[in-house]
Length: 325
Image (tube, rainbow, N blue to C red; front, side, top):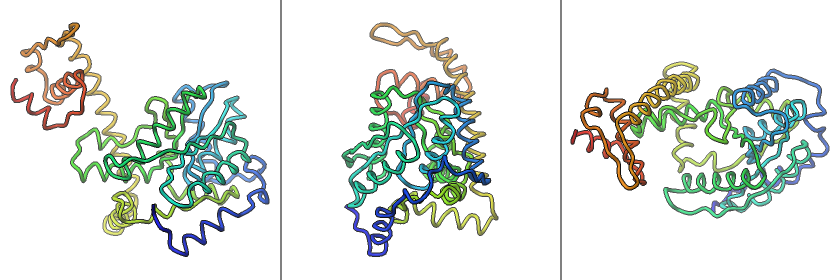
């Protein structure tokens, strides 16, 4: 359990006990600022691109922080106008003393905005892969369960352009290859990330302009987490040394790499289907056909073949098989 210092504790208590009903709900506010317009537009475009239509149910994954709260506010405004049903899921990890209260407080705010249903999912976080990975695994499992139970067409996540830039930098530092440099997808199955083109400063402005007071998670300032160090130290240093716009450039690079990777994946799938024959208990691989493929396609075909047998495989495994060809 993370111990909050006195200033953080006071700030969180003030947030928890603020009477949000003194402020008019977002949908009652007529003022349209650039930040509000940008986030609302991103929500509409995400629905159009992903095929969300009138009558569908979408769920916003909301922590109470500025990014997901801004997303929830925009969804609460746009959904009734599009005939879309909109609810929310708050995943409470139980790793901080205050998070149970934060979850309940956030649920009240989202209900006041008009989202329905609003669910709080309490999860237990394991220790596999480190605290960040374990929390992520528990969170997505809870979101998947909520979507299945409620029959949701989509789950909307509040990842921003800044989150995308951090993800690309982390992938680059780890040498994870093109797949990691792809960053996060705007759509991945049920999951939609409409704010990947929106900067964090815009979501903060959205909340301020809308009279919404987000929760500040003290863990977002703890440099024991790699992503926090990238956010607080690495990106600002790059900005100061190389000039502004680094986050935008990284996010744009991820988009370009994703387009190329998607095309290569399509070519690899076609090649796989032409040179691999699957039997009830075995696979037959046309080795000369595999050898004739360009290296990026060949390696993808090998990986797909290995994955048929289950398990997780790295580039080392793929290259070991390629050396046998």
